[in-house]
Image 1 (spheres, rainbow, N blue to C red):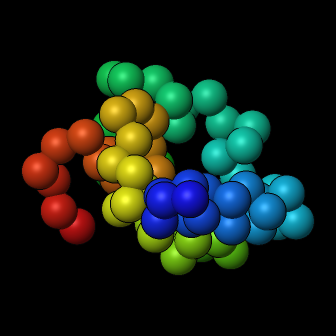
Image 2: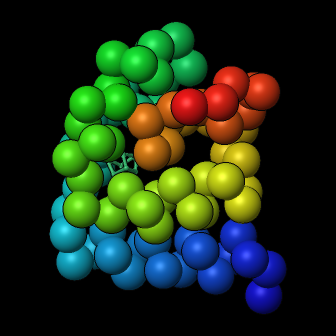
Length: 76
Ligand code: SF4
């Protein structure tokens, strides 16, 4: 398995146990939603570190992960 796959499995397991706020918030998958407007939710998320690890490995093309988008050269 790849690093991204392992990270995704760990994240999914943690999300199942912690039910992060993004699960019920459709803004996280909207292409025109500014990531900055959702970052405050991620900052208090119990699985933030796992989410960031996955996103850094996979660089998802869509959505907001760990408070930012990963399909650009944006750094935070
Ligand atoms: S850090 Fe943000 S995007 Fe990642 S699981 Fe938590 S709320 Fe969702």
